Image 1 (spheres, rainbow, N blue to C red):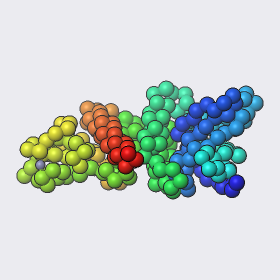
Image 2 (image 1 turned 30 degrees about the vertical axis):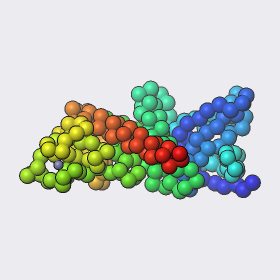
Image 3 (image 1 turned 60 degrees about the horizontal axis):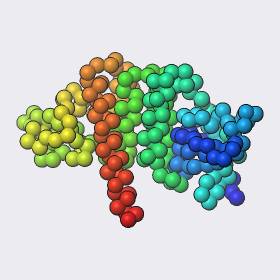
Image 4 (image 1 turned 135 degrees about the horizontal axis):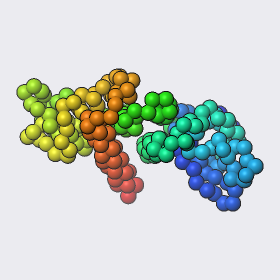
Length: 240
Ligand SMILES: [Zn+2]
């Protein structure tokens, strides 16, 4: 079996047999990796504590046919504050779950990996109301579903002649009064989503909670859910 090194974020773990655990990792070099960590559920295991969900680890792995095998795991970051705060832990796990659904197996995923590490770091260092939502919007964009924000995604009408009043990710983004469906949206929320996707993320992460951040967060969640459902259906159709 061939040996390789990579970094990874633990997205999820589950039990295998008496003492082993399967870990699902997001790595820059190989995308989503499913690997067996042997003996880690024994109390003496030092590696076990390093392979908790959200841990950022440096790995030495054996490549397997179905599952790889973790030979060594060294912590890069444990993100301790996340484990001391249930709300932040839940936000971190929500991002890991979304990343898992978008990541491909055995395909380099440097951009997705950097996005997730950056988002976890933001959650630790400056946990504002839009960390998770910003991650979701960027994930949509990375997955080819970045929304149109400055014109109607259906008829192409642009402000100021056309008011954009609604949003539906499956239509492609913002919608005018005539084409509206999906959710109502304010011009301020559209502008904020534009900041997230247009390189002004640092500024967005500093915003205090308001009805506008609530609107952007709510839209992010329903948009990502819609996108992932469509993706899942497309995948099933392909397999059928
Ligand atoms: Zn329209």
